[in-house]
Length: 85
Image (cartoon, rainbow, N blue to C red; front, side, top):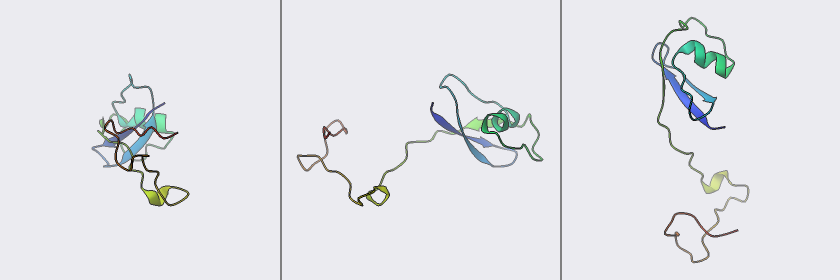
């Protein structure tokens, strides 16, 4: 299930939750319930907005070997997807 980041305007918090692509959370109460966190002092009807976030960047430092795999041709693949298996 994909994860999404939501921001609450009332408390400026960003919370990551997992839900179906067809779902959208509208307020702080729904977001807290889905995330399993306490609402705190923020009203349950405070609006939240799903953020347009991109994918995570993977660097060679985050790989176990410390080196990123390279295409067999030594250059980027035209499609952006390497054929290495």
